[in-house]
Every structure is written in structure tokens, then in C-alpha cells.
Length: 238
Image 1 (cartoon, one colour):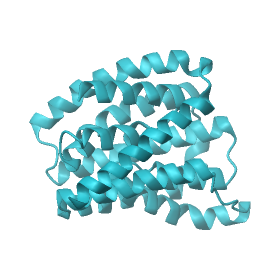
Image 2: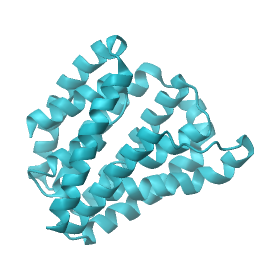
Image 3: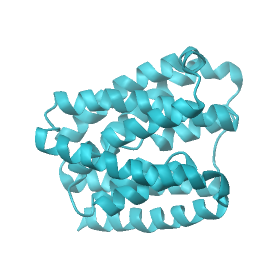
Image 4: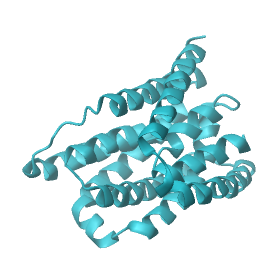
């Protein structure tokens, strides 16, 4: 478990995102999906907070994406409620589908171009969809990355917006899993320990971020995720 989180933390530091997309399915190979989702929330909050502190502009982000944040918060609560009702097998299947969807979108680059005047209207449903997906699978990245690419965010704005949005969503998710009784004290202790492990990998990832051939590295990660997503589908159907 610690090795999984360490590796995922490193990838998060190196490429700016991907911690829940990688760590949740990997961790679900040794624990059930619900436990994996819950114990990885706190590490994600801490790392996204650090990422945003390095690059962020909170007032500008809130002004532009306020409705995306609020609707996403509602979606997170609803998605977490759905998670409490799902069987472990169903949750595993859903996670596998979204891992493969994330890989497919990343490989094909299928990010629709969204006209600027559509943004105020599309932000609320995009945020809600990302929140529901994040609540169920712990990874709202599929919907958010697609949307942020679609509205044409520059690299700096993209990283800061992703970090701040994830930070906000994960705070809401932490409250939701606590409210629904999914985070007992025993798992909170595990989550705190995993946060320390993730930060160790994250720190190394940040140091090598500018030295990596990111395109080649991303390809390796995506191939690994594709194999892992397929395995989750097989496991969920078995």
C-alpha cells in the first residue's frame, strides 16, 4: 500500500495531476474500492494545496470558476452518497470504466473546443458531472481535464485551476465521507500515514518535474493505466 501511494505521489509531483487516477485503482487491488477512495482524500488535499500555493491565483480562479466549484461540491456529495449504496463489484467496474475513459481521452486528445460565450452556461453542468464522478471514483480529472482543455486554458492557468478545483472538491468530499460514516478513526490514521508517504514521493516528483521528458513519461503512465483499467473490469465482472 505504501509503495503504491509513494509512486502515485511522485507522479503527481512530476506531471501535476494523476494521483487519484493512479493510486485509487492500484490501492483497490489490495483493499475494497470504498476504502481506497476514503484513505486517499487527505493526501490529495495536501498535495493539491501545495501545488496551488506554488502556482495559484485564488481570487481569479474563484471569480472565473465559482459556479463550477459550487456545482461540483453538490456533485461530490451526491456521488459520495451513491458510493455508499454501491456494491464493491459495481464500484470496481465503474472505476475501471473511468480509468479507461481517462486513458482514451488522454491518448486521442479529444478535447472539444468550447466558444468563450458558452463557458458561463457549461461550467455548472461540467462541475456537477466532475463532482459526481469524483464522489464515486475519487477521480474527477476525466471531466475537468476535458473541460479545461476545451475552454483553452494556458498551461499556467490550467495547472492552477486544476489544483484549486481538486483542493476544493476534496475538502467537500472529506466532509461527505465523514458525514456518511465512511471515515472511521481507524481509517483516518491510515490516511494520515499515507499522506506522509505520498508527500515523500511528491517532493521528489517536484524536483524532477522540469527535467522529465513529460511526453514519454505520460505515455508510460497511460499504458500502465490502460492495463490496470482492463484488469479492474475483469476483476469487477468476476
